[in-house]
Image (cartoon, rainbow, N blue to C red):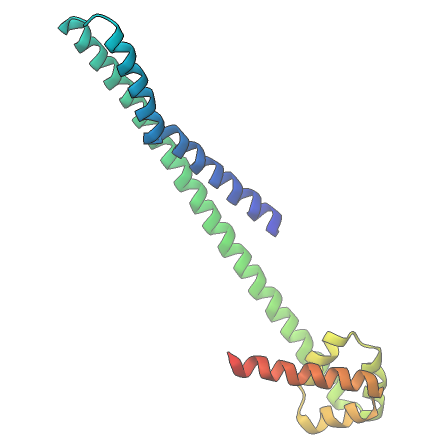
Length: 173
């Protein structure tokens, strides 16, 4: 599952929350009640029976709203649980990818470490910079130094700088 799907689900959940909030916003309900109160003041007073009838109608409306809210709450809880499941799946996939990536780097380290420094340097010059940094970072210092000494001086300088920055970043954490 990719980030776009997760984002879409999160947006959907937020829209549900916003809809529920707007539906239940006490300020809106208070404004409506004030409007009705003003209208009632202009009308002649209703009989007690009519007032009870209005109270019962409002009570029924509140029960309907309450049941709607409970249904929304159940839907939201289900969506939250789905999001948690998606999050767990994404974390598992990321961990799996990292493990696979680490295994590949370890394999490359073994390959390049077993080569002669001059031959390894020729191949490292052709490698992507980030891959070369990862491989050299995981090698023993004397082997990595031997390979760097045979590499293109400009690329070796860039790699050395990245290695130094990588070490500095990890000391700060």
